[in-house]
Length: 359
Image (cartoon, rainbow, N blue to C red):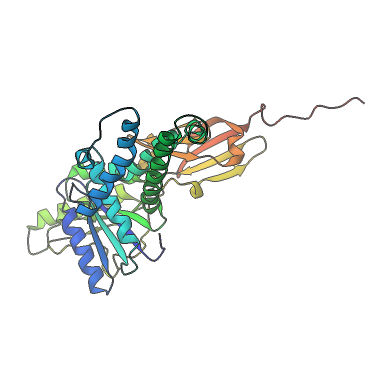
């Protein structure tokens, strides 16, 4: 994905006006002379071309696999109701727009936070499944004796599907991709916003702003209501820290006054391989994993083979450990102000200590 093209994902607490803020974002970008591509990923509103392409992709992989097992032919349109297909179709529209040199910013309406989390996690989950399916055993079957036509059909179809899903995943995980949350003045959002910031960070995306939408203007509400909303906004800013939160009234404000929607705002920490920091100590190594404040308190961490597994509020991230730490075993983990610190000690089965020879 080009560094020039920004990808903005907008999501919000239920009924907070995410779609309205998306439209305002596109309008302000146009006023600045920037071309915005809009994608509705909040439901099943993907373009017919993207939906057809994803149906064909599923038919070419799962459908062909079932055919090899003896199933009757399945029409690609029969996959239209498969869970997750609408999300894949929306992401197909996203990568099409990102590849368009005339587009400066792609704005995606992801709908409610739960829907956005599913959308973000979908490509990574599918990549893990496809990597498991593209096993050495299947590759050997493809190149060895026996019914090579069936093996080649399955292998080539899965490899092609993986290439498409990888483009979606890379677009979401790109350093210029950010999430902006939309909420409205109620106590529920004071708990939802920090958890959403932390969950997106664990999934690998940084939240760079919170739009406090539907705030009353001075000429629209009594002084007591206005004062109460200002207190709520102060509480929201504390809860969202280190992410900025700003007021939006009947005239939606997608970013703070004086900034462009394409601006890179201060963002919350996100989990990614480059963000991991290794510190060598006397007899062990320390690995720092940056997390948003809510995740610092409640995240769990484990190891699976060569991967570090981080979990928060049902959001999981598998991060490949640096080669050095793959030869160590995890000793313990502690919580710091900025995330988790995991201590690794050399695995004696790998790091052998030389024995003293005869005098």
